[in-house]
Image (tube, rainbow, N blue to C red; front, side, top):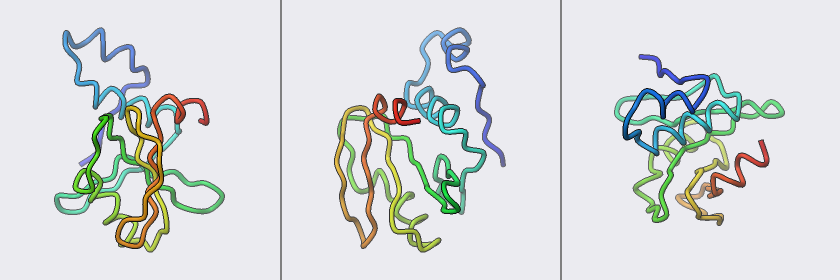
Length: 117
């Protein structure tokens, strides 16, 4: 099954009276990064993967101020399954790096993510 993203996040606000901000942010991340790929296996999925300098960079959208390890278990599974050392979690305001299960997860606030892309 494919995911569907609108080319403009402002359309989401026009189409929905009360949009799900998590989905709006996910759509914004996809559009701003130019990603064309996501990953789904069983009950796991990673929002997008970017090809950068010949490497796969997985990105998970977690627009929340309180992110726990279980919230990014899918990202960690992707990192392990594809033997990738690090990935990104785009957040509401968390900015840090953590090593989880031997993999590095870089937490980046949405505003910084948008500025760097």
